[in-house]
Length: 276
Image 1 (cartoon, rainbow, N blue to C red):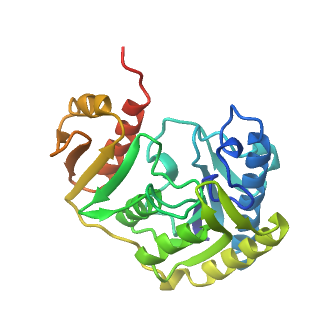
Image 2 (image 1 turned 180 degrees about the vertical axis):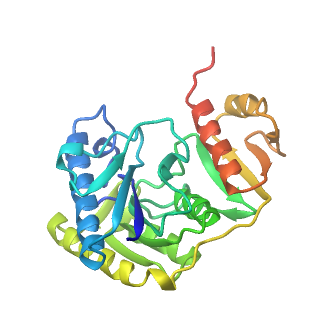
């Protein structure tokens, strides 16, 4: 019985192109979260088509981590929701997981054209591990790799798919939209996208033995460019975090990716605190 973790974000979901569809305080959010739930269900169906005995855990990984509609989610899965929590977007990850699937993911900050591209939040302008520019895709793939878990599949726009393919060329990617800008895309009809997601997930499961984890051996050097100099000031109060040359960059050397990942989560939280 393979154990599968699905990490679901919202910006890369089929049909979603604008921040109003991803923000709980905006008018079109309910549509966005319904589309997100439907995309996840399509991927679940594909996983179980290929592996009927699979044990599937879904981690809600967007914003508040409370977006997926539990009552509409496939009843054969268990859902991890809410924050803060260990391992952030990959809540539920451990060395017993046999494969990780990214649903509704987006490209990193600075990528383009790419729909709703960012890294964690608007607090972060850029992020590098051992000198390589990564977004949420690369950071999460590297965290999974530390546990020996391969990324089997990613769905999102074409830019997000290309981002994973650079890191894990063996993984299955499914573009549900073609980016035309930060808030514009050529999209598939959601029903068509879901059918492609189902088929892609089934294919990914049949190929999981061929896909290696994306590993970055520790220690790892983290560099983060932050939007606000005030956040930089606060970040230097974290043991091990130092200000780099220039006003906006902080550095940290972690014993492994997991330690660096925790620092990124702390930096994002600090950036959301308004100065007194």
